[in-house]
Image 1 (spheres, rainbow, N blue to C red):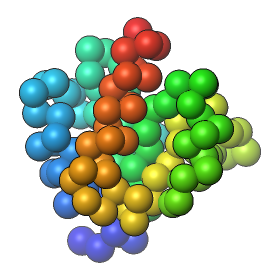
Image 2 (image 1 turned 135 degrees about the horizontal axis):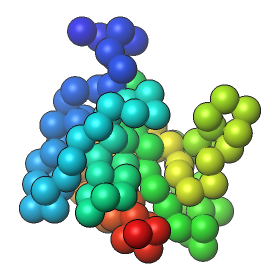
Image 3 (image 1 turned 120 degrees about the vertical axis):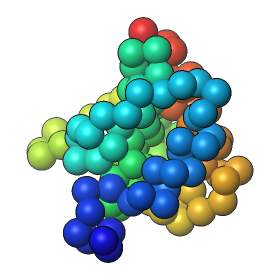
Length: 111
C-alpha cells in the first residue's frame, strides 16, 4: 500500500518500534496515524506525511525553526503540544531517535 493509501507509513512505524522497544510502547490508531503511548502518554504518532512528536511548551518555538518541522493542525486548531516532522527530518535513525527522545521527555512531563 502506498503512503497516499495508508493511514501511516509502515516503514517509519517499524523504525519507531525498534527505537522504542525498551520502553514497551502501546500502539493505537488515532489522530490520523499510528500513535505510540509510553506509560499512558502519547509520545509520537506516525502518519502518512511524517511523524507527529509531543513537545514541551518551552521548546516548541525553537523546534519550529528546524527544517522539515511544522505546527500540528487538527482541523482549524493548532495543537500546541505537538509538532509534525516531515519524513526528510527523520530520514536517519539518529535523527528519528532525537525526536523520539523529545517526545518521551514531553510525555513524561505531561503524565
